[in-house]
Length: 599
Ligand SMILES: Nc1ncnc2c1ncn2[C@@H]1O[C@H](COP(=O)(O)OP(=O)(O)OP(=O)(O)O)[C@@H](O)[C@H]1O
Image (tube, rainbow, N blue to C red; front, side, top):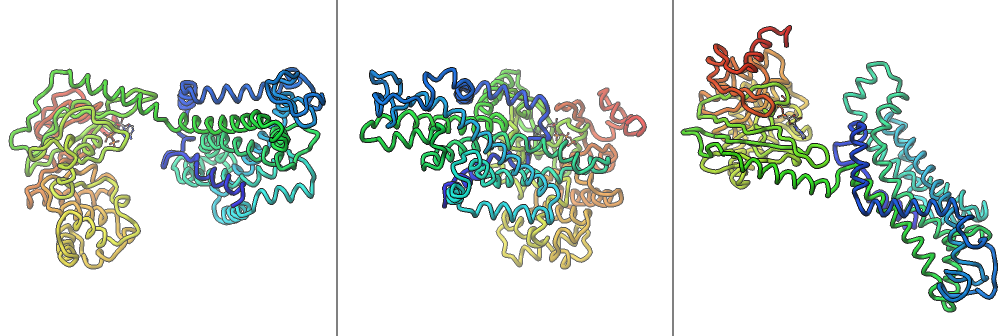
């Protein structure tokens, strides 16, 4: 593999891609940028790297004023003089008697120009290509990807040497060509981000509002690639320094123009006469490359959230937990005869740089056998987070700040093994979006069988017979046919019945259903609710039903907890709640449900 290919592979591997699912751009508001800058300015390595790069730039710009001599000034008495010897030249002289320090200072300009050329060419070619390919897809993407693959297949260093024979010693041209050679790294990065952003609903909304493709690309899509490209730039600059110094070292530069690689090559030729001579140019090239790599890393950490940030958040989590533990604690005993009891549940998420925001704060509730308990409240009140905590399905960045989920004598939050044992067999889940919870690549029968056999010892045939019976029970007219179908071949209502089949297949005692009818049309909603009620009656199941719909609560629930801003404001039997709501928020909720104009 050539040097350029190696560099390119390195650029790809270092991968400045945003974390999966979170293209930074569209979510970057001004505050995000400010927070990233603050993080950068608090990172000592980043500060050191930025300080060093700033120094190099200043030296490059003011080289004529700073350098003690002109780069081609000769003092033969200083030929091959060692650095810091008694002569006039601080870093000694090269084999022609020229001042090494002055040559290095003057060469900084050429190096900076070379870096800018590589950066501009690789960014313009890569970003434009990636934007076009990722946004328009189809033939544009096929052609652009073919060109990118072809460029990546070129033996870069050989090409640059061959170029020398055609254009002569022109480092700017060679660096422009090098920019094109590494542009595919930017192209791939941008194309991947754009392909992801393109599917977002706000892009569809922009199209519908009549914005032209060009404006959508510049206003919405380009912002999404800003951060990854910025991160990649550090690595591109580092690669540019290495390649420029390499070409000069091979003697492919203009000998009359001073360069770091040229000084290194001269020192290397005279290594037996003046071994220390190689140190200064080698250190300069290495330090500058290192500074750009560190800057790239620091930008990545600052823009994507760093370990320091996580550590700071961990401190705040510990503080929040300690503060909660210090409060007078409610009972930690399970409710008498309850199937599951939630006590003082508190869940937090990182907020800003180092804070933790509680989104569920001291929730108490319980569900008995044969009871359907509704958890109702406005959007964002913390209903789903409560349900996810009971299932051990909280997202990675969520933190349990306190509380317990007591089930069969164990606290499922404190005992992950008990949670694993209970989930799928004794506690099951019915999700909101039936279609997105079925794997489109395998048949309904296969995924139901896989799920069932993961929790129950059964042969494939036994599982099939059991599942076909259940599919019939949940109202699927032709279970055999549906068993062999893929998810896209069935309707949303059927998909929800399939998921309910999966939930009851392990014979659970508790079902947690998160808005199980929200994604369905009204008649199918009624059928699914009736099915859940029948299953409760038949099997004596306990059910926690998360919903924002008071109609659903009135239709199916026995008891209800009303949630607002992460806490339960009222707990009642359903009839009592509708007849005499106690909390002002419940009254507000009921009146807006009865009067849709107000809602
Ligand atoms: N991954 C996350 N990171 C940060 N905050 C989150 C995350 N997931 C949820 N939240 C926050 O937690 C709060 C409660 O969310 P939750 O999904 O439980 O609301 P909900 O009551 O179920 O509402 P909805 O019916 O709209 O889903 C919200 O303020 C939400 O912004």
